Amino acid sequence: MRCGSPIGRRVIATMGTRMEDEVIRLIAEACDVNPEDVQRDRLLVEYGLDSARAMDLVVGLEDAFQVQISDEVASKLRKVDDVIRFVCERAPR
Image (cartoon, rainbow, N blue to C red; front, side, top):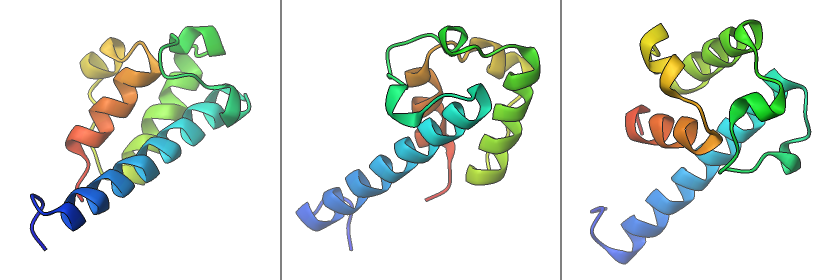
């Protein structure tokens, strides 16, 4: 199946949605909030993300998506959407 075909685009969109849902679930778990309350345009610190919780989140993301997140990169992931984009761009499909 080619990614350019309509079927391919639907499969990629579905994969992206599942990845987004999983990223949001991991953020909610690390911050001890309800996943339904997590909004893409909000800062992670608004959900109580501190350095200890950030470490938990990074480990969870690395395990779930087989990505490596350096401390430098992690410090630049400030919004929920930043994390979603990072994972969707780098996670193996």
